[in-house]
Amino acid sequence: MTTTSDQSTRGAQGLRLDLADDERTALRALAEELVAASPGLLDDLSWVAQARQASCRMPLRLMETLRDFRSDAGATGSLVLAGLPVDERDLPSTPSVRESVERATTVPAVLAMLVGLHLGEVIAYRSEKNGALVQNVVPVRGLEDSQSNAGSVPLEFHVENAFHRERPDYVGLLCLRNDHAKRAGTLVTCIRQALPLIEETDRKVLREPRFVTAPPPSFRQGDRTTPHAVLTGSVEDANICLDLNATAALDEEAGEVMARLKRILTDVSTPLVLQTGMMALIDNRLVLHGRSEFTPRFDGRDRWLHRVYVHLDNRRSREFRDDAGAVLN
Image 1 (tube, rainbow, N blue to C red):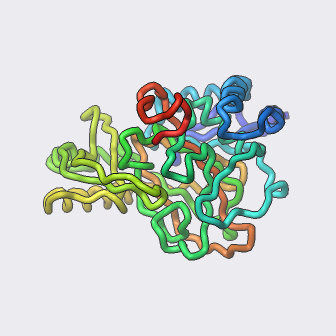
Image 2: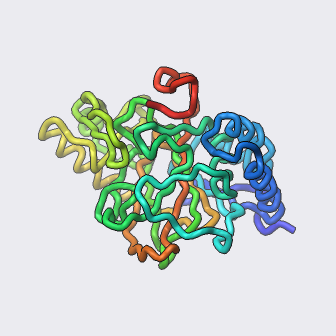
C-alpha cells in the first residue's frame, strides 16, 4: 500500500516528491546492494561507475522527477525529496570535526550519490574537504560564528563556490538529522522570483563586470575572481553568480545596487526545513542558499547533512580534473 499520490507536486516551496512505502523499500535495497559493492569506497571511480549504473534502477517516479527537475527547475529552482530510507536510529554520532567527509559506503551516503548521479556527474574540489565526493555539513566547536558549513549562525545567501569558473550546476543536501529543536532551515532564494522586482537600471549594472568574489572559508586555497557580472545569460531568465559574504562591488553605485538586490532576494526567500530522510536539490545557476541560526550542543545529536555537487557536463571541466577523475583542481 502506498502513502502518497502518484504525482510529485509543485508548491510555494518548489517541487516536492514524497516516496511511497514500496518505493522507499526498493530504494533501501538498492542502497544496501551498493554499500556491499567492492571496494566500498565512495571516491573510488570503479565504485562510482557501479553507482552510476545502479541509479537507473531507482524507483521510476523518482527518476522521472529528477529528469523533470533537470529539464526545468521551476520558479523556486529547488526540489525536495521526502521519505528517503534513512533511519535516525541507525546513525552514529554526528561528526563534530573540521573537514568532515564520508569515504566509506553507508546507506545515507550511497543515497546522496545515487540521486546526484542520476541528475548528472558528482564532482568535488581538491581544495575543499580534500576532494571528497560526499561531504558532511555539521557544526564544529569554535567555528559557530563562521560563515561556513561548520557554523551555526545565520549563513548569508550564496551561490555555491561562486568564485570558481566550474562551480556546481546543482547542490544536493541530504538530512540525516536536523537540529535538536527540529527548526533549522536551508534558506533558498531564486533569481526567477527576484528578477521581476529588480529595476531595469539595476539590472543593467548587475550585468556589467563590476563585482569580484573571493573563495569561501571551506577552501584551503583559491584566488579572487577577475571582475564579473552578477547576472548573465538570458535577459528574461537570467543566471546569477553572487555570494553575499564573499562578493564585493568595485564602485559605489554597484554596491548600492547589490544592497538593493540583497533586500529583494531576502524578501522572496523561503526556508526548506529538512528532517531525517529529506533531500533538497538546488539549481546553483538560479538559486542562492543560506542557513537559519541554530544552537549546537556537541552531544552527538546535532544537525547533520550530506552534501554533494553535481555537474551536467563533465567534459567542460576536463582541464581541471587529473586523469579524468571526479575531483577538480
